[in-house]
Amino acid sequence: MLLTLAFRHLLVHKGRSLFLLLGYGLGVGVMIVLLSIGEAMLTQSADVALVGGGEITVLPQGIDIEAMRTGGVSGMFFGIERARFLTRQLLGGPRHAASVRAVSPTIENKLVYLSLRGRSVAVRAGGEIPSRLAAVGAARRIVSGAWVDTPADSAWITPTDQQLYDELDRFHLPATPDSSWGEWHYFNLSAGPEEWWYITYLVGGEVLHGRWGGQLLISHRSPDGRYQRYSAIVPSDSIVLDTTRADLTLGQSRVIQRDGRYTLTAVAHGAAGPLRLALTVQPERNRFFPPVSLREGAYPSGYVVPALSGTATGEICLGQRCTRLTDVPAYHDHNWGVWRNVSWDWGAARGRHYNLLYGAVYAPEDTVGEAATGAPRVLVALVDSLGVRQILRAAAVTYEGGQSRGGVRVPTRFRFIAARDADTVRLETEIVDVQATDRTAAGGAKHFLQMRGSFRITGTIGGEPLSDEGTGFFETYVGGEP
Image (cartoon, rainbow, N blue to C red; front, side, top):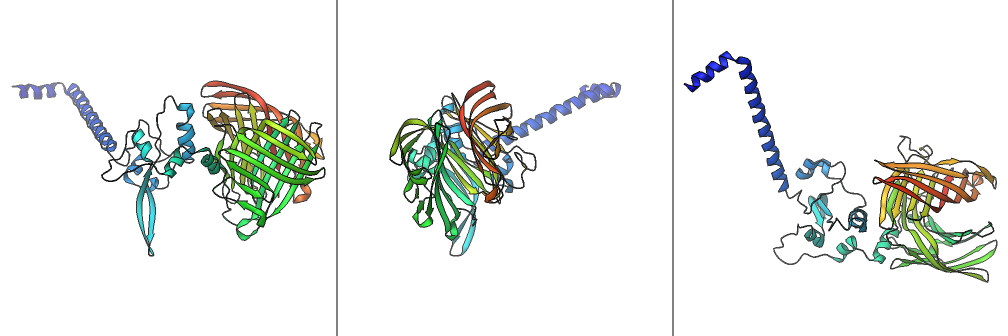
């Protein structure tokens, strides 16, 4: 009887019946899809390749999750750049201490080759830090023996000051011989409102082929506005550098880093006579910027700032006249790369709350301020007492005004606007002093400007208004061979 009524309803009300059947079919289809997704999520949640503990998993940008699960080719070469800095400061540092209990770095399913007696075998390998894995609730079940942090594990997560600054400030060897290779420790000090020092410990040349040497370069801007330069040339057999440490010896001049404190000694000569200095530079905690590559390819360029803010104490002697400095503002960075036919913009400024850092290196194929593709080239970093606040990009540094200084036209101000997603920073700077060097006769370069000025930054960071001001040191080098 019920079956007869059902068929009769289908025949009499064909449209209504078709609509009901369509709705029923859609409902069944959606249910099948949801059940399939749920089953897939359940399978992935138990997948050893995706289980890492904790509440949030940070993955390399652009990686395919399915490729990560199955070990596909697209997952083989992904990694998170500057993972140590990310672990220690951006995620696990003091800025998020109230909300982030632990960070556990993991390497999963990386392709490595084991070679033994002329035979190579491709294997998958991973790496984890035992204490951090346990802290995020994913400790391994140890069947036998013990699995605990090694000294290398501890140095990776929580390095001592000695380990941190050696890691940041170590020296490098060029990948290929190039006579324009250069690497240096750079310090500047503000001895007073109208007096400052630029100090550079430089090595360069074809290091791997033995055709290289070093130079100590010091510039002093006296309170009356005059500049004096001092230097010392050092042969390679009187140089000691270390690719695992910050220490550098250039003959009688040295940079020694111990427990995060730098001891500088220098002996140089200039038109004003001999110069000797003995200083201690103490970086301010968290006010550093990690090593980055500003350029790759034929013109590699690397850069790190161990001390965006610091203090210097010691003595500088010009002849028999010595000046004592006590806790004066100091800055320290470290550069390396090939400097043939390149130019650059650079600046480091200190405000009431923030340190601002910017820089870009331009190769001959670049337009000024932008790559040939039009992508922003100027790296801009904003740092506060808790570390790096934001990293942004600017298209170009715009110089304005102009006056003649030693036959070189120099700007009176400059500006740029940097952005990242919704964050923006506008920098406006008034130049109060310039040391201009005309290098036209030294191989085609136009000029090198070392500037000091007052700055103001405005904008928005993390949805909050930004405003700060202070003073800084800035450079621009335009031309060819340095």
